Amino acid sequence: MKQSENKKSLSEKIPWLTSYFSEEYTAYYPGTTQHKKCETVINKNEFERKESKYMYDQVTLGLNVDPFILSALKEDITSEDVSTNSVMPHPQAGEVDLICKQDGIICGLQVFERVFTLLDADTKVEFYVKDGDRVENKQLIGKVYGDIRVLLCGERTALNYLQRMSGIATYTSQVAALLEGTGIKLLDTRKTTPNNRIFEKYSVRVGGNNHRYNLSDGVLLKDNHIGAAGGVKEAIAMAKAYAPFVRKIEVEVESFDMVKDAVEAGADIIMLDNMSTELLKQCIDYIDGRAEIEVSGNVTKENIARIKGLGVDYVSSGALTHSAPIMDLSLKNLHAV
Image (cartoon, rainbow, N blue to C red; front, side, top):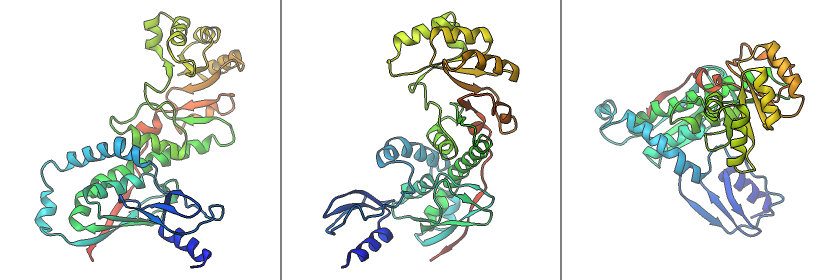
């Protein structure tokens, strides 16, 4: 076989190569556990690797994502799907269309697929878009093939994830667009739905950037930490003494006096929380590059413009996850094949 034919076969048949060498490669087939070693000579400099549509590596997927998806499925099916078993008592191959019902940013395709493959590993999903793509109302974005009983049992859970994740990605991209050209990095917060953070944080990343993932990720001294420590300077000193030296120390402040204390104590990042525009300007002028600056507190798409020219580094918004509307998607035209 000619080398050009080899390359064509690879790009068509193998979406993701986990490793490749001068005389062989290992192919991973998504949705299965199948790995195949192929005795084909490849010049890896000429091989054009396709971008994976998957957002989680297999270890993260199995350890941290699958348990949440299975929990959601168990919530929806506590004993059996009575409706499906009533009308479909026996296995029957079928297919259904995944259709977008409004414009937006698609996000969560891997999770959508995983819902069905956890129910039945033989289920196949075909996507015509990838996470981060803009989609339009009435656009056909994929098809699901498998046992009709599995398609019916997994439909609502799969759509719940995809609609929620796409809604967050869409809203985040809209807010990020308002900051375009400013150099300000848009961040989320920990105001996520319990047991859905791994999905919601990823959705933000498709349209913006993440703040710390959880309490173990970094030091952020908020009002109650400061109260417990006895003051801004005391809290920062304690954090520096306790936290590993590679960790930056961020402190949340609400007044000009607290800003002065944070600068004097050597905070790496100062979060200006719930301040008026006038107070923001005063605090930013005082900090004068001695710490990175984050602005937070009731930041939404409607009011974010006020901080564009102030010279801050970051803006964090809980609204990215707690107030983003879902994006309407639907599974339609289910039929036997």
